[in-house]
Length: 166
Image (cartoon, rainbow, N blue to C red):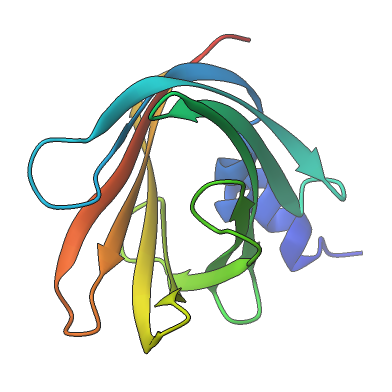
């Protein structure tokens, strides 16, 4: 019997690449609320585990922002049928009580997805949020997120630089 598309992807496709992130990570996160210098630079730890035989990966992380602890999770995946990366993200700082869903086609970057959120209850305009993951070394990864204003201006919001600890 011929291997399934998932088996092929786990062997040498996008699922294999996602699964290379499995492990424990430590680094720092920079946060910006406005363009310019970051308002916060703090330590960050994370673990990435496989879900459902490698179909998805779960990123659990903890950090500090402006002296306050926070934690979050993101589930990353690759949808073979639509050839799209996907992410479900929530945390105790940025997302309040929401779950952001993001999706994006492979643009030559490893992982690049776009979601949206409402900035405030009295502001009905949606803002975009782009998340990009890239390998910066053998055991190093950078996760960068960008805010996108309703007018389309993109500015860096967070940047986590991780090194693998195991």
